[in-house]
Length: 435
Image 1 (cartoon, rainbow, N blue to C red):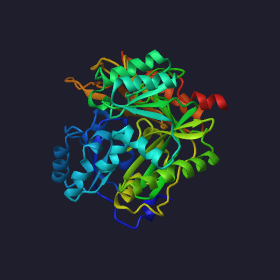
Image 2 (image 1 turned 90 degrees about the vertical axis):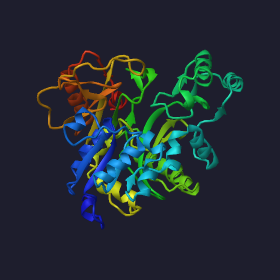
Image 3 (image 1 turned 120 degrees about the vertical axis):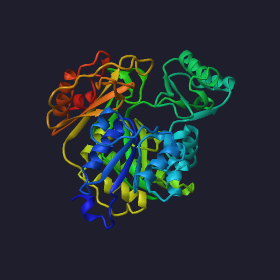
Image 4 (image 1 turned 120 degrees about the horizontal axis):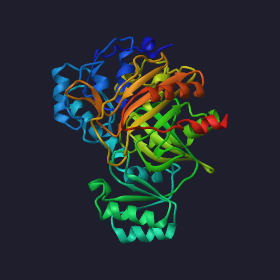
């Protein structure tokens, strides 16, 4: 049963989705599938999104421009994809002109915009997380690093496009990372304060929680692959692929995560006076001692969204609208059987310097169970789709088994032609090797 048929309130007809990545392309596809048949526009969008809905060249951090667009286009619901407009107060600005939005206001977005702020809440409310130190000066940070040893994790406090976390394997690497952030200005203001955490070991999982005050719905589990190279090697990225469900999160473990992490987190945020209406993304390490929080994000994950939303057998528009209105309690959410996988195709050199403007050639046809999700794409003057970001595409496949989904996705990855394409060949391997 879809939530659209049980929602006791009318659904929006004119929807604006803010953002330009794979997450937003997936949101476009799932919102367009709503029985409400909404009109959807996107700002700023990408080449793939522009092929499906009207796009407007207004940057995601142009708060005034986005509000003006929403008013001019008579938008009655805004779904905010990325973290930057949330932290800049887009939802606050929309509320002032009477336009509901899915996503937290700036006070809630601070949970992602400041890792230190989140860490202080985790510690205050006794939610499992790694031991840490917080520093703004180099010498105390170096002294703490030397006292803890390696491996150890150094995090820039602020937003750094998914690249502000260094998992240092040696003390020398840790010291260099701390110096780069605090003295070398590697991440600008985002790195003017750093968080140094003990390195947790185990498998990670991503828990996406649609939240509305103290009400929440836990979406299907997934597991992201953060490092650029096969076998989890190389630097961290924004995410090189993911799959759902993550079978390592058994029903018993999910119940433990809900009791020890999800519900306490939702209540802690409310107790702090934050009226959070949006996605609380909880990154969790499954350590030998139990699940432990790595981070909060305050929006749908990318690329987790690309596998989680397609698995919902629920009207996504109705779900997000209910959360935004404070009417989430009691809304049924169901999941399709089967598995989903997303393989990210990146530009060679990512997450560091990479080329733009390489022409992408797509297969003439796709299997029914595969979608190509655009992330960093644009059109050149000749009208060709070209690379325009570090993470370029996501190939998402759904199938009865993870192996079948992986085979379908990788077959399409091989058919996509681009001189600078790189992708991991082992997305989902941990789960496949457990079987």
